[in-house]
Image (cartoon, rainbow, N blue to C red; front, side, top):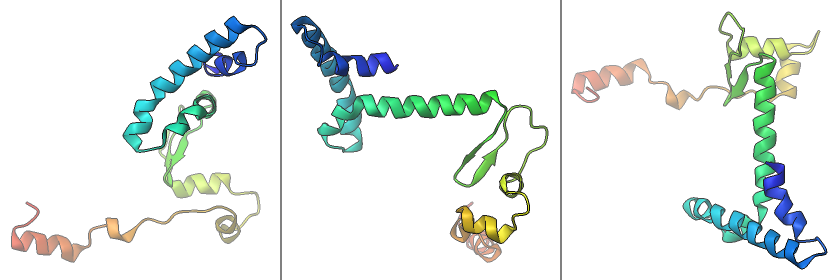
Length: 140
């Protein structure tokens, strides 16, 4: 993947004219193939010049995920912990945080060092809200 995205850029600096022409055509193809994505997200077309860097970051994230999977580690996303391969019991986010806490480190020290997101109360329906919906016939 690195060759596919970086060789056209490197080829622009090769001394021969044919290498520059082929590299320019390949880089143009990369840019053209990325333009629909930029258009969909409403981003400026100049971002297409960053395709090699974007691909490199994507490759790094993919390899990082694959290595974590290989070692049986779970993943964390939006404050939730998902167990990895070989973990028998499901861990909560709090259990995962305790595993990652330094030896002798208190919970307050841990929270000061790491940003722990709290659940959003607006997303949790209250009992009165559910009862009102059932009484009025809404939400059924």
